[in-house]
Length: 325
Image (cartoon, rainbow, N blue to C red):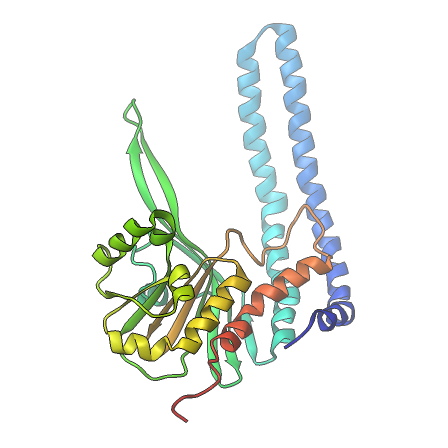
């Protein structure tokens, strides 16, 4: 497992030159953005002062519309394309190298991601998304285990009408974060889903009743003997024996420790002899900034820690131990 000292050395020897070059490109784009903003504000201010002098508020409205349209046009011509190219180059030259540093057997494709079909097949989230975005796909073998993951943001929409009858669309996040799929170290059939125990945590004894009713899932509520595990998670499955075969006392303890160290909401499912792990994160993890410097070790450390979760999952869940060998 690579350490922070290893990362510092890698940053100095392998990333600093690329970072400096990318910083120059970023600054050129940032200057254009600030120029468009400054120019637009200046024109608006002059228009406002003239309108006050002429006592003509209509002129202010017209000026605002013209400046807004011109600002958008200038952004699309001088900034948008270069920003996209910069982000793509940054991911390839920086994030891609961090992936290789973690494990040379891993490959990185920033434009790809875990597909919606795979996401739904996990049966972790049952709501079919109306909008689904995935990117920053990593895949490869770590030890004996093939793993793949990417960022995923899934949403569903609702529509309402205001008092005047105008329809409004609202988007709601189902899941946003990292979504992993890995070979599990046991062969099994059926589905076992491990979810954060939000009902019992929120409603206490009533939460237990809600869980037992299981109004949304096909599987049965499965109660296990580990009290610490039961505080954090609720388990549903189509077979008690299979669930207990998968969720051994050792694995439950490792999941409790992993959840405590990670301090993020996690969801798991065991299906098709694979383990699916969804870790909630409330932001884009690998997008470089345009207006602020990216040449910072703390940023690279953040990339490293998020990407290294793949290895941590394999290690924490003991996936490289092959039960059938």
